[in-house]
Length: 177
Length: 322
Image 1 (cartoon, rainbow over the protein chains, first blue to last red):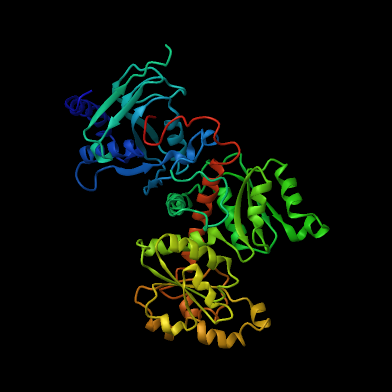
Image 2 (tube, rainbow over the protein chains, first blue to last red):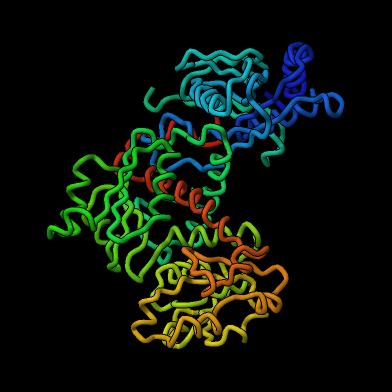
């Protein structure tokens, strides 16, 4: 996907999210670090509305909630979670860049629930690349890509130091195949 | 990620990058203590044993709470009340405890090198919670963490360690850690407690607190042990307080933004007068809360490099796909 395609993809995604969030009063945008949080910051700017009426905002670091700590060779970096609003009874739009196995989202849901009992959580992902390992689905998907397990899907964002905004798909042919 | 150590034995053998990794990780843990559910599942199913052969309340409690906040099971074992008094060796005690399926042993012992010895004998991770007059890495890390909160640029910072530097594991760990981060360390106290030979560690030795008062950015006031006076290393507690204690008069002469640290427990009126201990320059209670975050970071980092780690590739590198 070229940088030219990224703009329209983001706009379609944004429009879909807006349809729901326009009807919400007490709601929050929560991004999963790091690329999900970058996208959530963009959404916050585009959905925020006038001062005082915009959503609450937070960022999640799921490293302490991963299910593979015991399989690691080293601990994942702890980036810190920032949720300064009251989660109780809030409507939350959870944002990430790529939805894959669903394990990150499972961790993020557990993390949010440790802060309180939200009214509802929606999931917004820019790219869904299939290959789920848990029964988790997105409510707002920018685009679905058919991929193989060992393909690589990376969302490029200028805020992360990338040269352009875009989605890179790399297919790997298995050695010996 | 700059951490691949199974043990945390001291700051002397850590690199500058590893120390920064520990401090940055602790930064990420601070927020956990502000939640309504003050717990994360990172070490769920792991077992941490506090193996303390010396009396300690705050360090043990801090490790206990740090383990609990990471969802580990924490056992407390105090050496004085059990098998060691029946003649069991340190190695045997530790091996017996490890045989119950322990992942991390946190050890405090009056002999220098005790933590290192256990790291050689045990298969699990070992964290040094103070060994003799050698090192007390988590205390120094929480001191440095607290200093960094107020003064982010440690390079060139002048930090005075005041008191019984000679017998202090806290001082030794601070000296290693601070110097690796570029700070200039002063050791201040009477020559019996701060021998000139300490300059070999690269510190500036002074026997006169008033002489360095105005140039120092951070004062770390070590606790004075009464038994040192009984052994004749200084004449009286009163004289020590007069020469090396921080009081209101001295605080008028220090830099406006100077910090006062104390590893606790404070002898009020000796190392610090109450007006200084409770005053605006004191960050002593910050040290205690930061200690929790630093110990969570230590448990988290060594736990991931323990015996069960390293079998399978991580499923996902940080910042990549979900």
